[in-house]
Image (cartoon, rainbow, N blue to C red; front, side):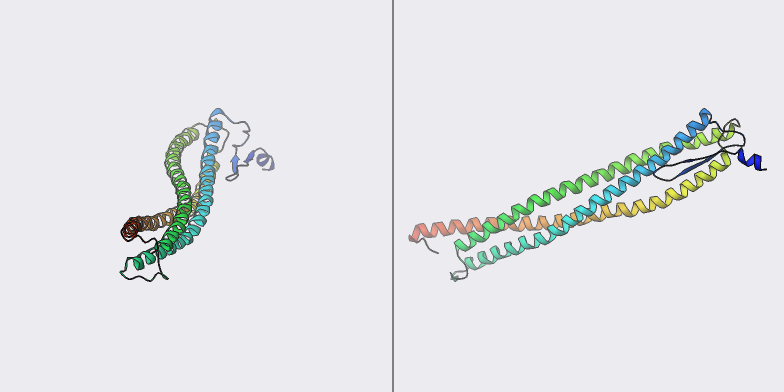
Length: 251
C-alpha cells in the first residue's frame, strides 16, 4: 500500500486566482498531449477569472474616485446656484419701477453676474472632466461585459468537449475523477468571486446614477442661467436707452 501511494504523483500549480491541484493516475508521471491541452485550457479559465476580477477591482476603484469628485461638484453646484440666486434677486429689484439704489443697481448686477459667470465656467470645466471619466468607466464596463461573456462561453464550450475526450482516453496521465472534483471546486470558488465582482460593479452603476442626477441638476442650472442672461441683456439695453434719453449716467 505504501509503495502504491508513492507512485501517485500530485502537482500544485500556483495561480494568482487560486492554486490548481493535479492528481495523476497510478504509475503515470508524464503528461500526454491531451493532458497538456486540457491543463492549458483549464489554466485559461483561471486566467479569465483573474482578468475579470482585476477589471472589476479597477473599475470599482475608478468609480469611487469619480464619486468623490461628484460629491465635491454637488457642493460646488450649490454655491453656483446661490450666486445665481443673488443675480436674479438683484434683477428682480432692478425691474421694479422705484427700486432702491442701495439694494440694487446695474453696476451691482454686473459685478454679481461676472462673479457667477466665473464660478460657472470653473464648474463647467470640472463637470466635463467628470463626464469624460464616467464615460470611460461606462465604456470599459460595456466592453468588459461583452468580451468576457463571449470569452467565457467559448472557453467553457471548448473545455467541456476536451473533458469528454480526455475521459475516453485511458492513456492520459491526469486522473479524470480527481480532476472532475478539482473542477467542481474551481466552479464553486469562481461563483463566489463572481458574486463579489457584481458587488464591485454595482459601485460603477451607483456612480453613473450619481453622475446622471448631477447632470440633470446642472442642466437645470444652465437653463436658468440662460434665461437670466437674456433678462440681463434686456436690462442693460433699457439702462443704456434710458441714459441716452435722459442724459444720466448713474442708476
